[in-house]
Length: 94
Image: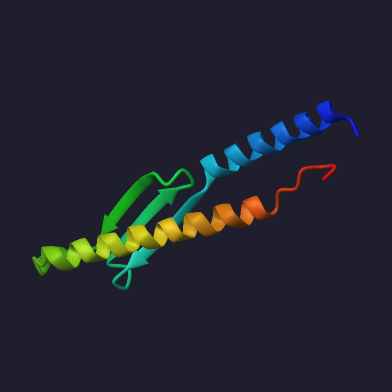
């Protein structure tokens, strides 16, 4: 077993995983799609879409709750996607 080859393979796998994380985007909605958010694999919030209809109600508390719910759901989706990718990693030779 060549330790150097194993380390190079592990580094390639890490680089591939970092690229996948950078490319990952998930979308989550709340309130029947009244609020939709897009989040990147690094958990950066990329976009927030709010249905104009919800603004007519002038209920700030409800809007806050919907945004929070959508962001939390997107975070859970990112976590699940990353967990799936990490479970597929296997260091050669072990």
